Image (cartoon, rainbow, N blue to C red):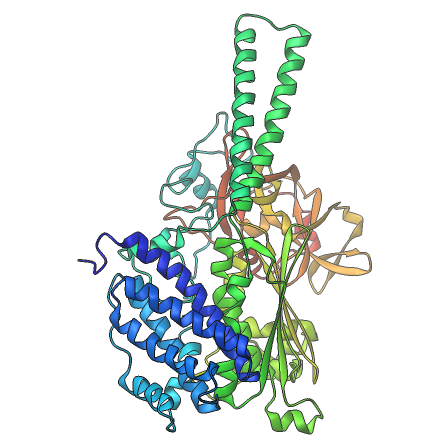
Length: 623
């Protein structure tokens, strides 16, 4: 039985407020280390611990109260000038915040937290008594280690039988002909218990700032992710639009009655057209208003990273400051949660790999203190997040050699790579520039996880690096995953959808303009030679005519021309997963206006297969 029977709602409120408060305390501690005499910071931190202690006391979490009380007493002495903050005291304080966060993890599982490590309590008391504290090195980075995400398991999909897939999802189907009646999706298209982007509640990250495991039975943790703070003005807008839609519905009902009674004069038809157009505008406005209720500032995510950077830098003996900008930029809440692991990897990677040691920086006449910058901004309907450093940069020649040494690519492939392609080698599973494995890095899973998670969010990640000056990782993300803008294309008469974020332009394919380079069909577009990839060839779909159009696309790794037979147009869709059917190259499915199923393609997976289209094959008619 839960230790908080009948207090679940109160516990949830405490965890939400206290987790944010503790993250804020962590950031202020990092600032305090640079300004140990700042009275305002000391007072703010003192109040933070006092507030957490008060909430824990109301929940009867006595061990958490005891730990907060000791830490609160320490800050009371600091703010009154009874003692002076030094490096050893700061280490103990940061250990205490890490222990508090671990106790939050116990509370999130509806269990009373156990007592803090006696060595930590003793260290806190020693600092209070004016003695010297020497905490164990293993506890120095407790906060940072608690944030290390688990590597994702890669899934190897079998080749797709596209005709069979369509039959499995939408019923019997003959290639080259549209279904004659609206086809409703089977299992996985709108199944209960799924979010708009197809994840079960148990797949969601846990309470912000904690890692407490992913258990279906953990009702409190699941509940934590189903709550969100919303400005009341945004809810008012949704309510007003709902009322307007109700009025529009009434108007349409009246017009339907007129039409049923045979009233089909020009004025009635014009009124119907106006009513439908008005409803279309209202639904669009409501859709946007609802999307805004899901938007949260990324600052709530960013606030935990100064502590992560500080702890890792101290562990590695480096001087690193984390500068944050664009905290007010808003992004879909679920996407913010899924960005946690990639951003932690990038910040830790910058501190570990990117930043030089103080001795190396001195030899290069760089300031001893390095800077890692984390920035976010909205550009159009996309969010751009950058993680940059002023460190050593990445050397393409070293990356090529490491990839060959580890057997990830062969020497010939490495020799034909340009520098930009060489930089992207860091995203290969198993790639690492470290010669030995440490507690921080060397296993070659970090950047692979970053790329995988960003692609799951329908985003892409780019790298820019200059040797001796630093590296910039740029993440491009859509504002939300709930609604996906797509371009609906055709192979034969069958429609497929591709994310509009990948599309640059649409061009006709003229056989006279297609050239063959190194055995592959290519086109010259504005002085850029781009390969042509036939969608029909990529999915093994039967065709009876050469492709007529090309979609100029920019994926996370390359630019190319996707050869297709035709277009249906642009659309905004709600993508649903295909439960129990996980074909390679399919991100999900949606319904067209007539009710038929349209598969949404995962272009990155399709592009993983090597190009095979020669010019002759591209324009050869099917036998």
